[in-house]
Length: 207
Image 1: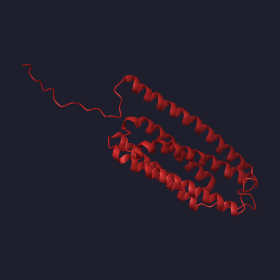
Image 2 (image 1 turned 90 degrees about the horizontal axis):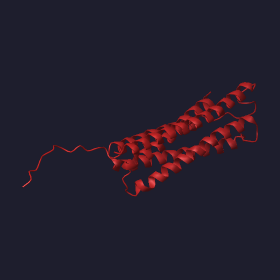
Image 3 (image 1 turned 135 degrees about the vertical axis):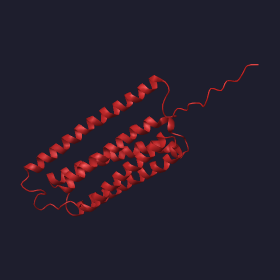
Image 4 (image 1 turned 45 degrees about the vertical axis):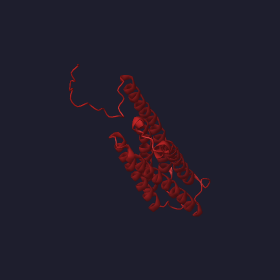
């Protein structure tokens, strides 16, 4: 009779880490690709902010005489909403990384709700400044404001679509631990959108 040999406790590898070297290489390549992608968008937004700075520097007064000043209360609240959404997504990602996948859908839902609230408040800001007489067609002040904020809002919508695609299987009860890298890349995009907004809030609304 063959003797049973006790080899000691089994070593359990985290389920989100692929064992195959080529799989780890794919993860690193995907991460690098997202970093390059976000780098190109960073340069694009930097160009937009630079153009805004040139326009503002050349203007005798800012805002131009006769144009209403932008509100700061609701945009400040929107800043807190987006920062909060980054925090909830980071917490959800940590739960997924450490194997507590059942807590992930709740944090993801909180992120999506905060993102939707951001868009709702941004629409309210657009309507309020429009009622105050500021339109994209009234001059450079209005066109710059609507151009920058609308372009950023499109990125928020894109981020919500991505998070929504992740939420479908998550809310259906599927364990997304094996797709951790996909969630991490999506979180990178969402955090990027949040950072851009913080810069936009400071340059457009505060300064």
